[in-house]
Image 1 (spheres, one colour):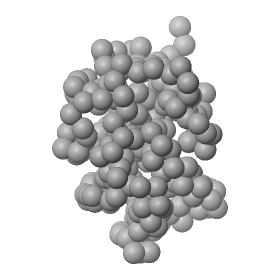
Image 2 (cartoon, one colour):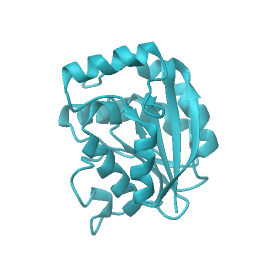
Image 3 (spheres, one colour):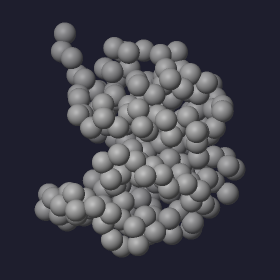
Image 4 (cartoon, helix red, strand yellow):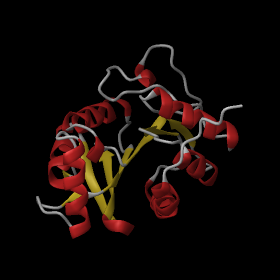
Length: 208
């Protein structure tokens, strides 16, 4: 049998620090919609350790989604749901479509390491979708590298940003203030910015 699981080396390094923050900022009940779940390793690590919540991974890329599915089958958890095919730029999202049902409503969205490896428009689509999907006081959690007031926070991030832009001119480390400005237009208020290892940040927004 072919094993479709993919592996991301950074996941093993960052998953525990991220989980520590999620324990503090996620709601006590409901479903967490993970946008751009990547390999699926985060989902299978977080779900059993956040057993009071349901965890719904999603991925637009079929091969990545197959990896998520394989991880879910390899490390099942009662609160872990099979992944959705969800592209933030395609509206409505599957969770908004008539007939889509969850045991618990979505109360949070988690998005890890997406904004710097996608076009800027994806940030706008993500914020618009969060506005539509999240309830009042619902949480949008972002993780990754960010510039602060237009400046890189470390030389390594500056080099990483240059590498990303060489690969794709539409990619690059985003300015947190610009991201927050888009969020505000979509009824999302920045509540926490938490420095993380390797010059990353946990960024928390709440739905007005």
